[in-house]
Length: 451
Image: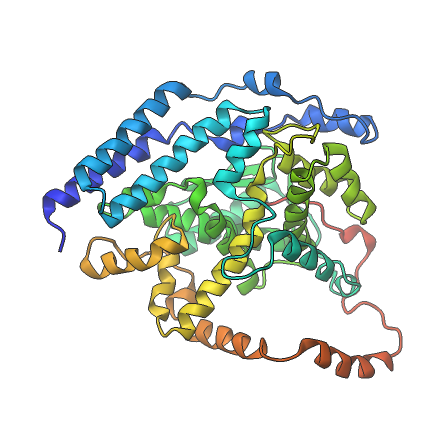
């Protein structure tokens, strides 16, 4: 068991990191204003957006990079000295500090070639291989784009209309957050200062005043932003000593975003067009890393039937903070995290079940973590150093259903899907032409962007 002096030291060092990282707002530091899109659309999508290093320098960071870098370096040294180089929790804390040091460098180099190098160090690259497999993220992203572009998507295009205004969305989300977390634990409010339709941060959700939503959008926001992002933040804040588990450095982004997408899937909240947007992000990152400029990536998606709105959005997400000319491959690679994290979370859960240790699975919600952290955190939970997660989705509280789901999934993966498809295709070929399963009109196409 850890001694009280050790625990007090761990908490003091952890709280120092929590305080140091507070002014860092990566997405705010690299966001584009709406007039950039207006000018791009006015050019017919042929003129590169006028975004360069000078543009970013006019956006204040909200902190002194040199001073924050010194303070992080000092904290890193104190962790080694006070906890010891071999302390397991100290190593996780130290790795998190080092991530924030890289973040400071990333933001110092906005609009420059070095930005892409720091981004790949923090988030990875579309050319990375899936953990434990030889396939690259680009290969997987392209395959998913094909699946979510099949003709069957039109048959499933049930008319969920975007007729919920921002105020109604706030009311609906507030009720759902109160039901899940307890009354008043999560703030939901109208915002005029966000670019996306909605965004979560800390213990609150902001809703863009100008946005409109569908029922499915509200469901996605509930489980993606609420159950996962806010839930893990609140669980981390309830840690008695390892308080850094409440803050999210880039090292945890893939697991966070992947779990959020997985929750959309397990609750049947997602839909093919949204899944296609998530998959497109991997392809966009890869094209940009290979040297395509902003216009070329934008045109790539237009040529594949993606709307102008969505083509701009997926391209803008990748080039923010980097260089729109593309020749340096200096881009923001965070958007590979959704697909990467989804696959790695699923593989982790399946492996935990097959290895006979399903009890570790709820630790995915203990705070902002990576998969490599979980065995150690579970061990420290058994010792009483780490608190069990309080806010856990229902299917992760009672693992019986999840066990059966992934058990069947593992068995089905043994089958030859090509032969099975060939068998059933003979039946389907004899079917008459049919109307879509759900009657819908062309105006049900979705263009709302949710993170």
